[in-house]
Length: 127
Image (tube, rainbow, N blue to C red; front, side, top):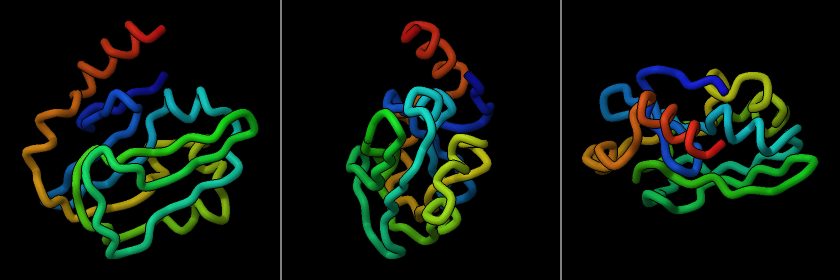
């Protein structure tokens, strides 16, 4: 499984990339791999305020449906509209094809997430 350095990860296999106060959020390679071929993605609206650990998206694949949870609290400032038309982009590259961008409301929440090194150890234990 591909793990990108410099990102923060959750135990539910979401990632967040921090740029100033902006967090770019998506699903990890592990998640898309276990879901299989993704056929549908539901995304929130711009200006939605979503709390950490609250479901912000639903993803459906040929074999399962899953909720995607917020790794950090924030206000949605951008949604990757391309995923609505082509959900399989998450299978192609889950790190390049982010889901949403949020203005974070509590940067301290990043401390509760795993570094890429910690996430790699976590995945090794999951297998």
